[in-house]
Length: 568
Image 1 (cartoon, rainbow, N blue to C red):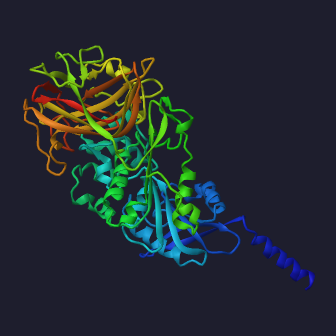
Image 2 (image 1 turned 120 degrees about the vertical axis):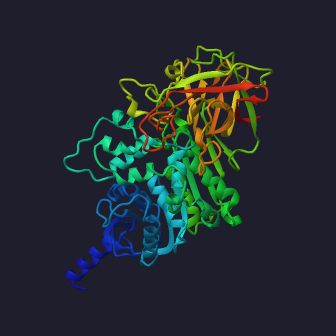
Image 3 (image 1 turned 30 degrees about the horizontal axis):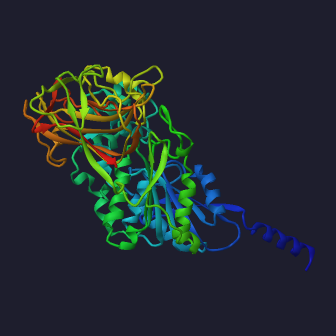
């Protein structure tokens, strides 16, 4: 062999050295001819491996660190820009093409010589939803998913109790809608207060057709059918790792997806291949210990990437030790004692629904009022509690400070004390507990309420008053009065008529220690995390407001109460 051929051979051998990642960018054609920019990361040594796929509207080139980790673990890693984003062709219509594009991408991957025929999908939020959208298309090769903090019904996530998550969708659409060159963003505090609600996009500074479309369809009608995947989930034969935090706006959706697959999947094997990791996080802090104003300690700083890799090793690799190693179906974090617990399901077996009754002498306004929370049902007639819900002065979701203006409201734990000083907030408390209180599961409030307007909102918060006085919001729910019976068939309130309503506060697990307090706060708004109710029932195009006189009743036969899943 001459020296030239030997040198060429050495170059080829060096290029094929295992452990070195090579990256190739290709344009993958979808069924309509639109080509999507796709990076393929894989070991330079030629071999067939399982593949991890991430499809994202947030720039595929930011996935290098994740790609290196997956390739080092023995996978090929594929990152793709969603249609109409970054370097991909086409026009982005949020979520509209992701099912079909996901199918076409998976079909392309399984035809490649470096793929062993088995693919897993990973990612959170939008990047989690595209996994469910692809899965219900039954694509070839998809063997496992890891949807983090996401939905299976977009309406059910965007509209909670009939109210829209206003700041969330407004900011997201504004950041993902092309902005005219001459458009200058205006003050978001003012924009989010705009009425009619359909003008919010122009108040921000430019037309946003998708925002208009979402806001003008408040009921889960035919407009949302293509983005309602929930009925199809039980038909899937697919292992899924569900990860979310209590404070995440996707918490209900992610936990419900787990419960649906765990309890109602038609394939028994699929039921056994579901896992839920439920932490103390909000949407931007998954795996971290510091969430808003609370540090939950080192235990909360979870290595989610390692859990994802373990899950994929089980279901994509022929590794018996990984595949058959036992795992807890549910791993959840208990706030307060700040420790992880394991369970066979959610809610954890043994959680007992326990009623805490709201009581007062009619003056539960603010934490200085006479509102009480008791396990004893009220006897006889107690006067109703009354608060005024003024849409021009909404109760903010978080206390407003120079460091946290109204538009910067967060979902995570923030001291509720300043809000509990408002006269338009009812506060009911246990006083210092004589014994610790531990609960885990989904929380509800059943209230007997009335208003003098054709519509009104009821916001309910469960609060733990920790040592030192920090009032930690644990769980929050909201219900728009006209949707008290059905989201599909709204029914206006009749002035003065007492109605029983059920407010869903979502999943939560916590411990409140001896000497600490349990509180329930009730008010008429959670702004701007949720839109204000003008209380007029004029709908999306109405621009007038009314101050609602809202009442909460607590007497024998109509006892308003909180229902906590207590762990005995």
